[in-house]
Image 1 (tube, helix red, strand yellow):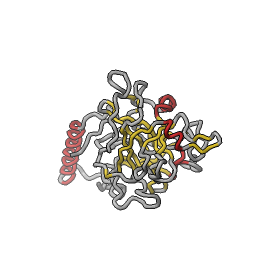
Image 2 (image 1 turned 180 degrees about the vertical axis):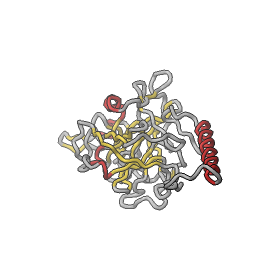
Image 3 (image 1 turned 30 degrees about the vertical axis):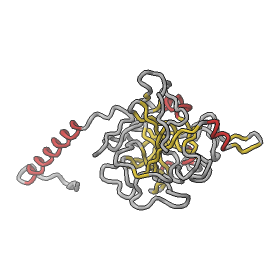
Image 4 (image 1 turned 90 degrees about the vertical axis):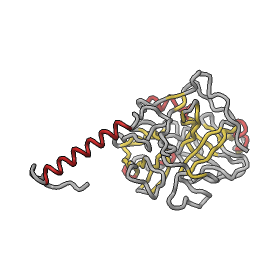
Length: 311
């Protein structure tokens, strides 16, 4: 809306403008009243590139954000509260003290068509985990991003929950990942760059540790990592998906189980995706992020029986 440099006189046209503004304010108040209070995390209010994935629906994953460097998609992240996003620490390697280069785009489904309801916010600072060593495949590859200002929740912008103490993610639990990364190694997502999603089952940690055993006593899978995906390959996260969520549904609520961290190649056989576990770092997140929401099993007996992976 164009704002006049000088206020109009309160007569004739001026009164007409004032009446129109009052009508607009009333309509906005009614719209706000109709909108459910977005207090619950992990509950999309649905409107009716991941290798081998499929397009997501608009507002299907309202907590997934694009972290942009100099205006270009760089990594993904997950919204925790109106001021905090969680992502992978390696996304800021060498640029930790240059937050002005980064911004966060929220409420976007297609990167090339962000829409009027998306919000772009600058980054105030980044807090990487103190145990992260800035090496590829290192443990504690997690960072908290403080936004310059609080964002407004909407049907397209909502927080995700963290798992509480009652939740465990056993092997074969079906979870999902989402992102705007490459669809194959070296093949970027095509216009309009629609958010991709992919169902991935949790892989037994012992199995994954054997797959990523480098020899001479060098195991790549640490106690704060989860593995998910397909041993046959063909479906996986890829370049540009880093920092995005591994999401598992428990009692109808989406929980952030992990953060896309690393893998050997993209969708390679016996090289599943590796994720940083939020269960392992929940207490650290809680110390920094006020009002982050935790959810778990309603009976407090764990995540329940997981559906078997589809054939």
